[in-house]
Amino acid sequence: MSQLNAAERRNPEAAPCRRRFLAIIPARYASTRFPAKPLAILGGKPVIQRVYEQVAGIFDDAYVATDDTRIEEVVKAFGGKVVMTSVNHNSGTDRCYEAYTKVGGGYDVIVNIQGDEPFIQPSQLHTIKACFEDEGTHIATLVKPFTVDDSFDALENANSPKVVINKNMNALYFSRSIIPYQRNADKKDWLKNHIYYKHIGLYAYRANVLKEITSLPQSSLELSESLEQLRWLENGYTIKVGITEVETIGIDTPEDLERAEEFLNKQTL
Image 1: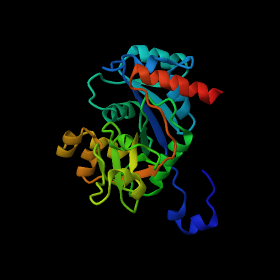
Image 2 (image 1 turned 90 degrees about the vertical axis):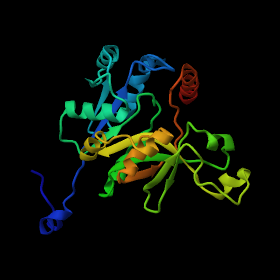
Image 3 (image 1 turned 90 degrees about the horizontal axis):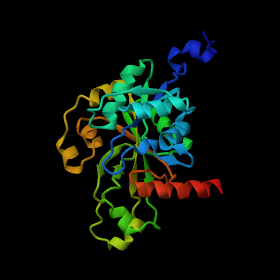
């Protein structure tokens, strides 16, 4: 048992409480736009290996959660940890919860890291961990500010959800539309007048909250926008937002893989 300092002995509540973080990387083999995406080769390594290597060491433990033995074999081959999950999950969140139940308890926070983000950065992972220093945080995610140099088309892109946050850095709403709408300004000035935030699809959940949200029925807002995080907001959960300035490249299509290869080559040079 570790020694407590004098202040901690006088006030037991002052003793540090170290949270244990478990990273889960959902990885499906089937994909409409890019079948076998986790096993695609990027810079001589499978995409899933690059994601795993970016995550390992940041958290107390990390597992790939998959529904396919081919992915399982590849993860084991490069020395990673893997857990098999059902083929019937509707979301990565559901797959994360099953993986967590199979890995075992003892973790305070479960971090859901997409298996197609090989350039996720340690700074981003540390930022999402820091969100749980606020005891009121149920769920955490990241955003990246749009800049004045971004195009209006980038801001308007429905595949890039936007987030409105309050003064306590909690999410108020997520939308595929541009929020807020600047009624009295020309659209060419919107990025100059207001800081818009692009959602980065990285989530972390307190263990008990993850259990609760996977049993919630789909909500009306979620169905309208096709964004599962709106279900959590509708049900009263607090989503803490961390800010990152890092731009990463997710891989959804073979064309994305080509761009990722170019990005990797530039980094190497």
